[in-house]
Length: 330
View (cartoon, rainbow, N blue to C red):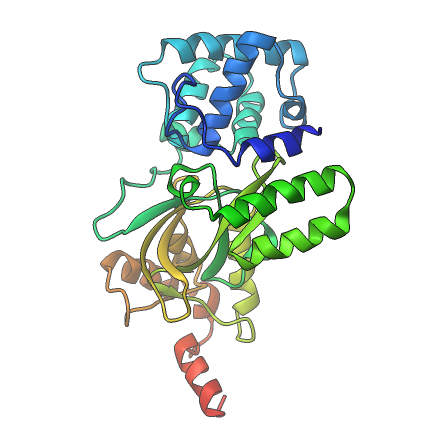
């Protein structure tokens, strides 16, 4: 059985609480912990790691030796991606920067500078008013609809999701993995439709391994970007892609809109995505729904600097454009 299929099947089961420091950990952290502990019993490093780092297998084994010692001494071991990133950076601080960065990318952990707090402030604890937070798998380019809407996927091994996966989805996912292993792609495609119809999808994680994930459609809180057919609509989508593509996000969800989308704030490697879109002049502050003064300040900065859509003398507001479209006057 292939390594990715094996991990996919294993991902359908919650991690054992007997695993040292892994119970309740974020999926990326749990994957790191399992590989470290596995090295302790097998002396093997993940085959796919070599695609992300520059050093040899022998050097990689040396990293895992150090990480194993540090993991066992940690009280408690890291639970969040930020804690795990800091743990890795501290343990491997004397190694090449490219290797440390590649190691973190392999596990979908934050950039070392963000983890150390040197390039960007980390996301705050769950803000007041936020109903829940999501930790996503890496974002695929096709998941970005425009400058203010993105589809995200959350690994069902995440503690928030693991107890809520419908039995029929678990069964279909396991049967699909078996069908693909047997190269019965027609059956696998039929099972895929069942999974997708229920709001789930098998998607690759940061290590390229297929896992079962829950889909969430996110509408960025407090901003409104130009629609695709509007001036700067293409630029807004491209800017959003550049910010999030291939990265894992933290999303604070506050509400649900009329279209069933989660309305939330998105952070990527410690960077507040709405702030960047406003400062680039590729989004409006959506004052009808959000009166945060910092959003107004960032919009004003872009307006003063005539950035993005503010290069136009009278840029059209997207909510007015949509209204005119509905009325047939656009």
